Length: 177
Length: 177
Image 1 (cartoon, one colour):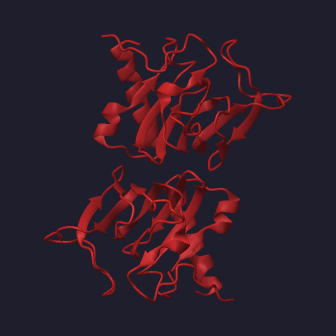
Image 2 (cartoon, rainbow over the protein chains, first blue to last red):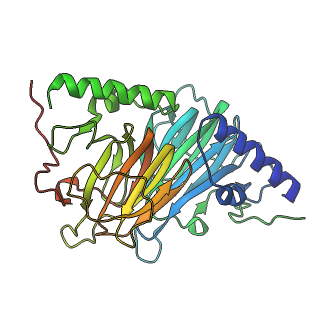
Image 3 (cartoon, rainbow over the protein chains, first blue to last red):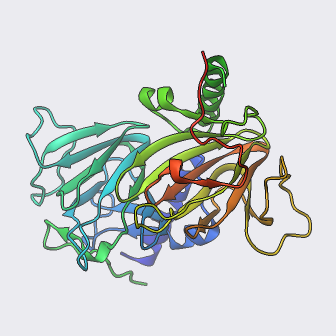
């Protein structure tokens, strides 16, 4: 991504959070992560992330999805002898379609953006609803037509260890000037 | 507390959360905990709690403080060989005065409601600000004049093991019909 794209996406994310009365500090605003997974199509595959806390025992983040934006399919493997990350997604605003292994639903709402999506048991989460993923569960999720804000509560986060279905994904992408 | 008091406090809490665009499910609303610590003076010493998730690895709650309501002084001891609970308080709305061991501040904003308060290093937290307590840190906190909403992220919660300064506290109080 170009730096100008990152800044525009950060500003857009801050407006979304502000509209939802979710306050962040200036430092959090500066560090707001715009993740395009190195794919170069943020609007369709990407995620905006505010990391509130990530310590040795637990982690908390706020996630923003633009309308129909998709967090790419991935799972969290064991790291240094600890079980993979366990995480709870709690929707604060909007609707999220969360897809996990299991029987595909008859009429899915989520639209996989590429062929690198393989699990289609879709869980629909509205405001105040949440779902907890067991470690090593393959998953992807997409914001509804109005986008979404999701609180993530979890065991410690080690994003760089994540395993992605799409071989083109780079979790820590390069920002170009 | 009388059941009618609990229900009134639950309804008040749900209005406060709703005004802040914080959605809860019907089940969460029904289970919303009104903690008066068995002291019978909820307005001055008490806390309203929505438990979002409390599993073997992490915990997340939303806490509501009515104006000037105080969560009584306590600490989280080790439980079953695990270190005491570590917790992060993140203010969503309003102001919170968090008191921990250390140099007392010159002009504290928090007013201890009884003599059972012994730590007076006061940290003032506004919206988007947070503070992480190490395990076994004695602490208490008070909402500002407008009350507050606080997200708590932590290691697993075992409230029944908490150690309180006030010997009259009963963490799991009885509700009378």
